[in-house]
Image 1 (cartoon, helix red, strand yellow):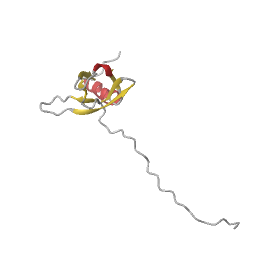
Image 2 (tube, rainbow, N blue to C red):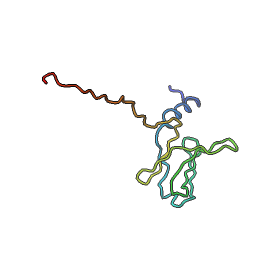
Image 3 (cartoon, rainbow, N blue to C red):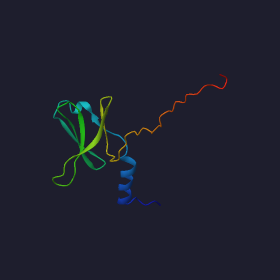
Image 4 (cartoon, helix red, strand yellow):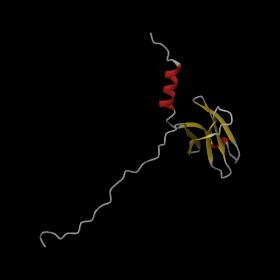
Length: 111
């Protein structure tokens, strides 16, 4: 007989396994004009997806605290679909440091 997971383990699993990926929200056609917005709930967190004056689509996490500023969420558009990623960690690609190549000037032994 298996026991259901408790609330703490469920929240931990949601935070580690599911929030770190990209999740489909809606089609871009759902917010066609600048100033349009869309309110969705992603893993229990309210997220507002809006189109700004420059026609860019942006997503914000709505904080539950009063007077809290909306927190930006990573948002991407692929093939006309809106995706968001709730992961807070920085996932920028880091270029490995490569030491500069040294040029050696030498004459061959046969010369």
